[in-house]
Image 1: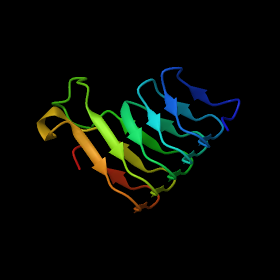
Image 2: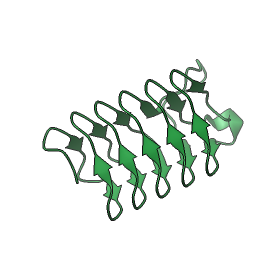
Image 3: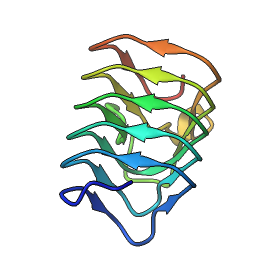
Amino acid sequence: MIHPTAIVHPGAVLGVDVEIGPFAVIGEHVKIGRGTKVGASSVVEGWTEIGENNQIFHLTSVGAVPQDLKYKGEETYLKIGNGNIIREFATIHLGTVTGDGETTIGNNNLFMAYCHVAHDC
């Protein structure tokens, strides 16, 4: 279910049973796997791939550009596995070319409120 106030770019790919909450924004290059829930006012952007059955709570920022002065807009990635819980106000950034171009999150992790996963982790 996609809430009517959510903004989902036509280029985004959403799996079966994905839920997008009110005022959430899903960017052009985003892929979200089956059964994942994205909470209200969250932003998922960049070249981000999210696996299945993740819970992304409200007001999170996933796939934003890295906080790195060397980053110049290159196509870099964020890959998130399956079964993760990402709590409110958490931020997870894209990778950088100096760090192999990818930030990677595995499966079944808990990211508590307000945490930050920096580029290239």
